[in-house]
Length: 332
Ligand code: PBG
Image 1 (tube, rainbow, N blue to C red):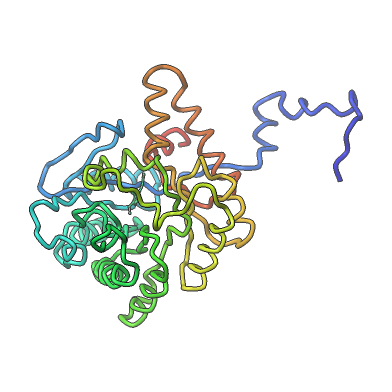
Image 2: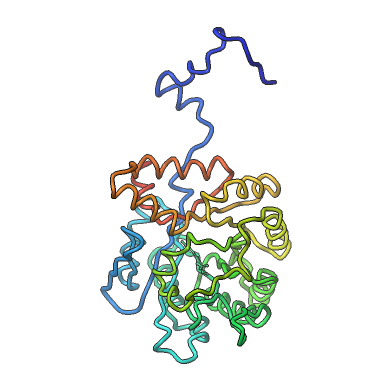
């Protein structure tokens, strides 16, 4: 029961008077164990290419990725998510590269699991790194992404990741029915314990800009957006329907993305379904914090932690963020 109006007997500021009492009454915490670090990889050896639009982040060759994985393990970060940069111009039928057992992602998974068996490895299931259009799937002559044909490729891609040892495959493509198709295929091939983190609620967002820059999809995509498959920012009920379908189809964990702009959605999803829920603090959100801090307009560390706490308060169990190393160091 709420009680109001007994001032001065009731003074809410008493519980804010000193650090110890603020800590004792705090309701939400962010732990290092809640963090997932998304990383970009490319071919070659001894390569570290800084990403201009994402200060502090780089594209790494697999040998360098292993060094980064070591850092994650030492800091207590539980999982990384890998995103490949594929030089599609050099590969004519590049879409088939997405499920090549000897492909960049598949090799990275094997190396990571061989060297750091306890570090969770999450993989992106979507075709955008492999298409010449920058779209997440196979397109027709009108640039429309074909749902069912795309699903056939996503299934192959997910299986190749599972075969290589990925712990969770993470479809980020927003095709209808892809979770069920992938789950069925994984079961049929004996991958009972390979999980699925479904990007169930992925909005058609401008905040993915720096990411598209990082993987080289920006130029290909041009003016064409992803509005025929990603969610309209004007809608919220649809987000719940997407989650309901993905859970029914076999998703183990669901995701809301972007984060900061969609805290209401995150809250509704967590409270409606009470399932393990991830939030993705996307590239544009990260870049805004970094650039404002670089200009001296905000304090990076305090704004970052406040941003992370907002996700926890809204109901996130885990947070995918490019700032994972920064956050881990701050809260250690
Ligand atoms: C593509 C994918 C995107 C992100 C993750 N997977 C971009 C997109 O849909 O265009 C965005 C992540 C970010 O902005 O940090 N399947």
